[in-house]
Image (tube, rainbow, N blue to C red; front, side, top):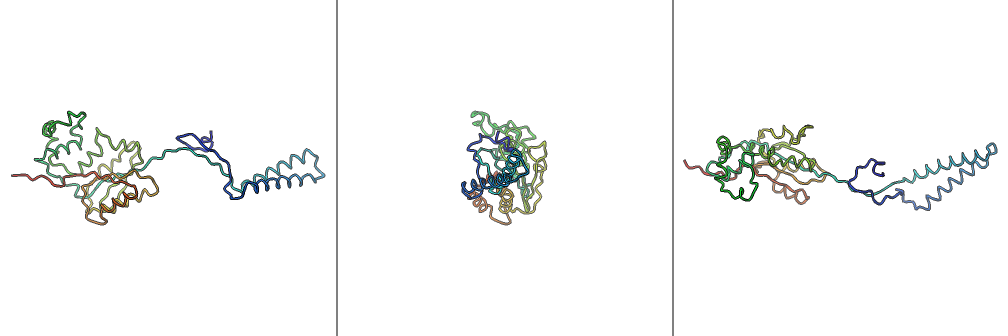
Length: 280
């Protein structure tokens, strides 16, 4: 009833309702003022000779009520209670949009790297049982279609990132959207925000963003994205990047600073740090 009256959507019961005043004046002072006002209103009409007793009582009561309301408002009344309201935390998702993300790392001769690319782009299902997970890597990639196998041998980093974002089996970001208020950003030498349309979970323009930025200000862009959510509870930052940073603040120092502020950074490494040698 109280929640409905005040328009509050709570996730728990209303507890400890309390009526009081913001003023620091003690209760006896407020009571004394009310009694004085009531007494003055009664005395003012009691002396009127042109009114009969019924009129005196009615008008005296009305004036006393008016005085009482004014006095109560002057002492700033308040009504307080406790309840529980679940507030969604914020989650920041950042996608590297620099030119280094267009690099297609050669994976020929590295079955593990090919398998990683196939899993990330949903060309092979994740193992559903321990037996599937225990299969030999070469046996698992042998199930790839010829065209998919060729693609996974040399796939651009940006395509790997897109595969993770819109993975049809895991649907990670669909789950994020249900649990958090998600902010989507691309970054390079500048930070660009994206909002999903009404019928979207993941902004289409965000997923399709091309890696065209000339330089990577990873540390600075990370700090800037978090600052846009200042004053909110941030669950963390999901960072899809190849890790290259050639301008601005040291990203490790920025991540350390954010960790101290209880904002964890979850980097998702895209690409191969040491591509395999190919013998010709």
